[in-house]
Amino acid sequence: MVTIETDTAATAVSHPADFANIDRSMTTPKRIYLDNAATSWPKPESVYAAVDHYQRRIGTSPSRSVYAEAVQADRTIHAARAALSRLIDGEGPDRIAFALNGTDALNLAIHGTVRPGDHVVTSVVDHNSVLRPLRWLEDKGTIEVTRVECDSEGIVDPDEFRAAFRPNTRLAALVHASNVTGALQPVAEVGRIAREHGALFLVDAAQSLGHVAISVREMGIDLLAAPGHKGLLGPLGTGLLYIAPGVEDRLESVRQGGTGSRSDEDRQPDQTPDKYEPGNLNAMGIFGLKAGIEYVADRTVEAIRRHAVEMTRRLREGLSAIPGLRVYGPRDPQKLVGVVSITLDGYSPQELAAILDASFRVQVRAGIHCAPLMHRALGTLDSGGTVRFSLGPFTSTDEIDAAIDAVQAVSTVESRK
Ligand SMILES: Cc1ncc(COP(=O)(O)O)c(C=O)c1O
Image (cartoon, rainbow, N blue to C red; front, side, top):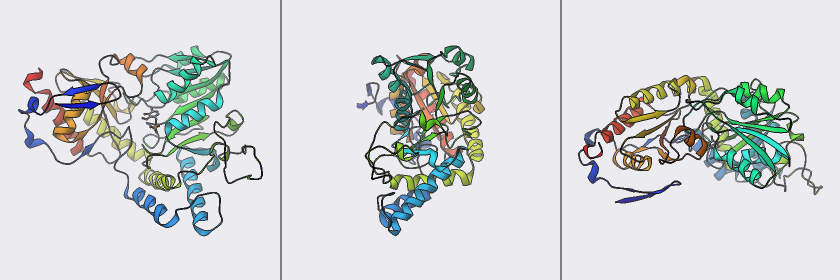
């Protein structure tokens, strides 16, 4: 008996006895990592090399000194900002503030913009990294929040967003792609609506940046928050917030401290990005992140997207053919990033995920994927959530087929039918 601790429940899983009749000849000892929505792995070799280079050869605090290695660190960090700005069609390197992760960037965007008496519109599709800061402010009586519902495919209707706006709506916050279903959301339409209402538009690009083309200008995005460690293929501990020109006047800093600039003043500088980057940056992580962004830019987002659509179609179709299995979210892979959530009759999500790893080395995430309102809309909140497969740019057809075969094998265990 194995007990698995997850964020939803401790689940008792009995194996391998239950699975003695699975044909293990098709199992593979190779690790099949399909948890790229949590963090991407493997990274390009250049990412490992960049982190190693920083640690061994640079090893300095950036933006604070003039010796050769410090200058090289400054240049590389500036180049990372420039590469990010190009990737999202932004308006220059200084509009990128580095953060600890996607959650940190979202917290800055939310806590930095809203004021007492404001109203915020978000959606049930959003992640707890948006929902929880908003709920916290709401519970304190600081703001009011409207959470727009989604349709049966897990996609929000821009007209429902439009209807939710009020004269005091300061901020609209929407996830670009659901981390539960993979469903892409109509961000450009909601961006237009937010602009018409004079509200700031915040997009959570945690599951889209590096996977689908983004133009912050064409999509009317004022604030774009993302981790560096998912689709951008950087190390954990990296994230970013894009701040459109002029938005810094409406975005307060939420932490203050040394920046290496204007050090004669005891007041936080008000230019971007220094205003939002007190303390030493994760230079090692940003070196790796720059290499990850360069990999994405060289391979091109369009090519990565084509690969993801092909892999997602293969996985979705293969899984859908398994009796007793339900796939959530849109059928059309063009409406999805590489995320596929399922449930299988006879198994809790935790149990299925544990078996997939223990018996087949297929590594997926199970449970409520930090998006409780999305699970409530799907009807999976009270039944332990889903098993989520999430693909990356290095996922191969062999891995997809091995994952499908593994789920197929588990589904045929007689004792569970
Ligand atoms: C949609 C979405 N938003 C935000 C986050 C938070 O990102 P991070 O883990 O970098 O804080 C995640 C991560 O799982 C996510 O999937």
